[in-house]
Image (cartoon, rainbow, N blue to C red; front, side, top):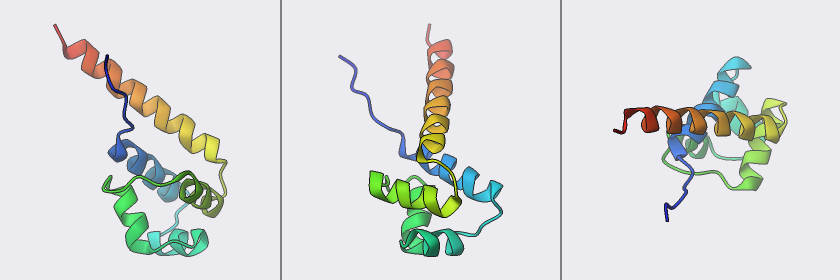
Length: 89
């Protein structure tokens, strides 16, 4: 059986993309989300995975639905999975 795990790099990339689309700095988003800037940076660089509560706080700071972030994470994970499957013989 294949174990499923969330790719922390994908999660971080998606959060960073949402933040950049809004034109906000890590400093601003972390302040609005009430988390440390270094924590947000670690999440965006795939070094840490956010808890649901942290993800919700980030979504609120970005003024987006948490589900929008999750949907984009799923899309990118599916896309990466397809690329991997196409490379296998």
